[in-house]
Image (spheres, rainbow, N blue to C red):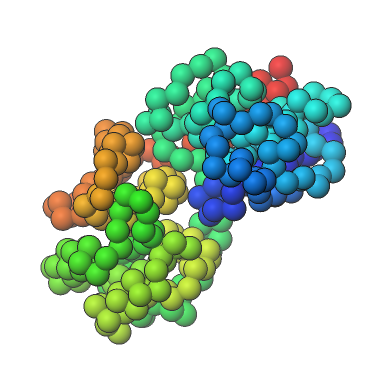
Length: 314
C-alpha cells in the first residue's frame, strides 16, 4: 500500500517540530517540513481576525500531499488555505488550540489543560512528541564515553530555558542546583546535565562551575545524549518550563522530579498540566522525599495516531 504524503507546518521552534514530526512518524506518512512565514501586517494579527488567503503567508512550495499537520499560531491560516484549495480530499490536523472555528480542521490535538472541546478534538495527557522507546533503547550506550565510570547511579537534570513565565536567572538556577547538591550529597549519585535548544550558555557554564568535575555536564544540544540519559537514569529531573520535555520523560516510566522556578506571571496552564501529571503519579517536586515509584509509560503520540488512522481509513 502506498504511503500517504504529508506536509508539516510550524514556526520552526523545537517543541513544535517535535510534535508534528512525532505524529507524522506515528502515522507512518512520508513528509516534508515547512517553516511558515507570515506577510507584512499579518504577523501581528491573530488567526481569528485574518482572512483565509494566500496573501497572509509566504508561498509554500510543496508536492502532492494527503495530510497537513500544523502547530502554532502562524500555521493556522496556511493549513486551512491549503486544505480548501487542494484538488482532492486532504486531512488537516492542528496541534494546540488554533483559536479559530474548530470545524476548519479534521482533527485538533490538544492537551487536556487547554480545555478545548469538540467532536474533532483529541485530548492528550501532556504533549505529543517525536521520541520512541526504541530510539531511547538504541542510544543507551552513547554516554559511556562522557560519564564518570564508577559505581554511582545516574540522575539526569534536563534543562529548558527562559520563557515569558520563567526566568533563568543565576538566583533561580542556584536554587535548583543547591536542592540537587543536597540530594547528591545524601544519595551519592552522579548527575548528568542535558541542555536543550533554549538553555542559555551561561546556565551551562554555571552548572559546570557549581557541580565540578565529578559530574557530567553536556555542553551542546545532542539528541543522542538526551536519549541515552533517559535510558540510563534512575531518576529524572526536568525544569518546570517545558511541558514537552516532561511529557517526553514520561515515556520512560521512571520517577520524574520537577525543578520549580517562581513564575514571573500567572502560569495557570502549566500548573494544570503539572497537577494532571501528579494525579497520574508521574511527577513529584524536587525537594520532596526521594522514593522509587512506578506508573504506566505515557505514549500519547501513538494513541493519537491510532485514533486518526482509524478515522481516516473508515
